[in-house]
Image (cartoon, rainbow, N blue to C red; front, side):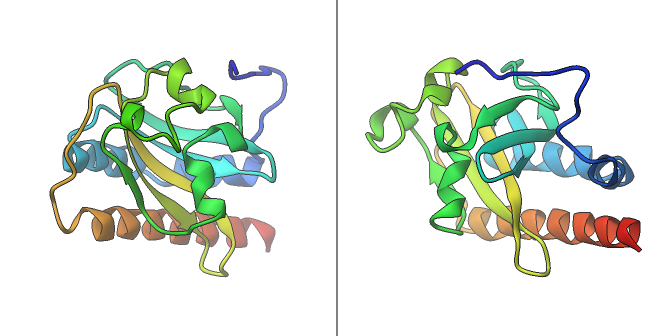
Length: 168
């Protein structure tokens, strides 16, 4: 499925946009994620009940995923966090029958995936922090899962603080 982008309608609320804009460290976090995973794409996505919406990207591989792109949530690898809320690492997607047939894998030539769910401090699942690459990867750092989860938690706390302040 090709992402649908409607330039006259933003999928992120003004509060969410402000929260993202205020996270000056977002780009730095995404750069760190690419260094930690040795992958060339990192992004933050928001989930709705049925959509995966791109909030922020760092993309040296030119994978073609852009801010405000929207995919059907169920077609994404990140949708796994709705079922199992733990970091997920897929070193070679093409060899994993559970994930290799998902439309997003073929659309963006995804061969490796690393991701962690982003939860807000009140327990709500906000979305995902993920890294992608068209190359297969070895995830041999024993601290990678914990580090990626810590970055996701930090992002969730910052979003929550900004969203809560905007509501008051």
